[in-house]
Image (cartoon, rainbow, N blue to C red; front, side, top):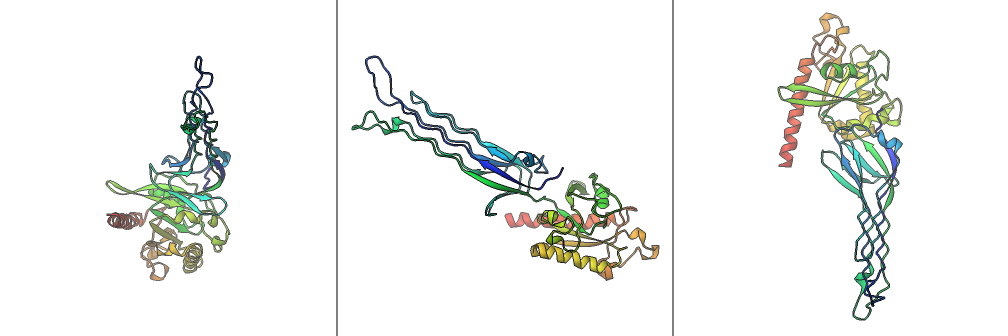
Length: 333
């Protein structure tokens, strides 16, 4: 099951108390202080695990606690530090404050970790409070409490190409033809109920990640259909691939609806590089397979059934992805 948004209650560990202890020696019934420090509480840590692609585990594990630090002991023994609660999440996970919506961390790449809640500091033992005027201090500090907070985890899939189209535009069929992904395919709306990722090879040693999201309908940004649940997944893509079914009664209007839904959700989406293709051209008369399609807005028509236009599409996508990656490298350097 694909789960891309969960709410959890998390708590870091309390610090252990400092020890109030005195040496016990023969003929010295009340020697100097020897109380050790309490251990620090464990932190709450989120880390990226590239093997994960869903937040399903946290739908059933909604309370996560780090370990408390141990109390200090006599003979100046410090308590052990509490174990951290390490929470693995998929790449592309946002960690937000559950009350304010503030973004606390954006976890994108392998090896990235973020401490979201720090454990409480351990208390000091009475050995720290001895002085020339007070050789038998009674004071020892209690450990500090850990932090607690409701957190919202939100997954935004990371892909190079995001497929955008109405239900039954042929997105899942295209993904299955270009990659080894096996999304559900059927001739009715909303066959795709969750995003699917596929790896598409476009050069001898180069590949790109393609994401198929459920089809968008007019009003998707307001929650109609399934769009509101999944529009977030196109926010991280490098390229938007608009797919318009040429057998639709009004393909031009279909394109305008898609662009408007993206604009209403986030105007930034329309600033991304994009490619417009006409799908299902095998259902047109043979003399119309050469285009132009959609009033000349695109000359690239494909048929995932017959394979027509797929090689050209891969070349186009590969070039755009390659240029985008090179630009990112240049910006970093």
